[in-house]
Image 1 (spheres, rainbow, N blue to C red):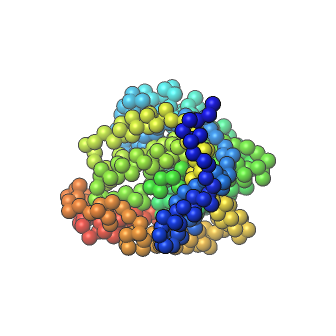
Image 2 (cartoon, rainbow, N blue to C red):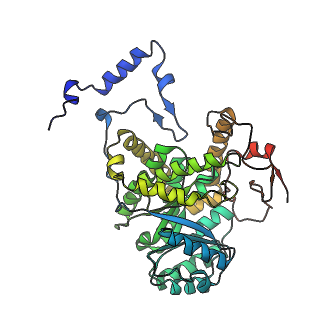
Image 3 (cartoon, rainbow, N blue to C red):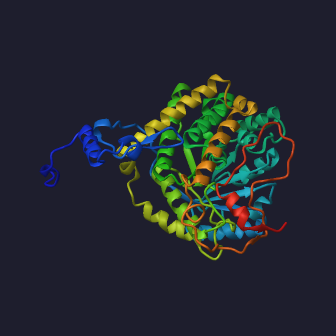
Length: 447
């Protein structure tokens, strides 16, 4: 059926649109006025047109995402109460964070056989404990998220040693048939200041170390953990570009696997200065993750440093996410000239970096030489300078600043980056927040 509105207008080419824009600029330079260059080396144009449209075939996953609540295990009893209440409130996934072995039976009391995905973030590697955990959750959907390379990148050290850590993973993989065993924690790179192209490339190279070491079948055992920043459309394109390249690389191994993607908001753009704006950032960041095609989304709204504990932030996200779930995400992304163009450019640039890493001996080799750390730091410093000059803005931090803050000027917990020095094998990749230097001028820390 013809469209009575569009039939009234003659189609215009991309060249005609550009010519019209140049005329309307009345002598101003088109490139300097209407083109925006990003840190990824991509130029954002004022319009995108069918003449230049190239549709990519992005691997899709059944459009059902799960909302995940993160729970820190300071006390098994307290963590269990939070988990049981979250399940009653409709949460379909839980992520437990632990720095040491915990009492398994106490933690999971009244929470099993509820059709819940269980995710873990363990900062220790204890083979006996992991066996017990797997045995307890044998009938559940489990994502253990063990990432020994990520631990090396973040802390500068192996849990024990390269040989020991890889041997434990190899033994556990042979003895267990979990849906997801290994994790690639890309959020390390984003929170430290890597740009989007770097994040995609480093995540792929990081994963390739596991696939090369443990075989192509390992690809189906990996969950990818991304942090989502505030560059809305680019973050949508980031996940799509990653899925595109993930399939491309697996083709070289003659295998297929549907990438399981877990997303949570970045900490890099969060601030102590305005809780409300942090909530708005989390909302849009999670929407980027959902539209991009994430399987699981979570947030940081249980972090008292950046969110008001009196507000029911998680329930708010839950309701918003339910409303978003009515959208047909595939239609939104695949027919968007802008998103498709950004996806293609991110993929091409990330693939170039990935190939360079592999030619140079692989991701572990680049970590040991400090190349990855140096590249991330270069971009982080560039962003920090852009933040300082106002080119990169955070509302109520370096732009449209209010005279009041949402907290007293005394903090009981030190939220700032510096930590006690310790001996490391490599330079660790540490998270840095853009607003820290501004906050240090406003807040006092009481040890």
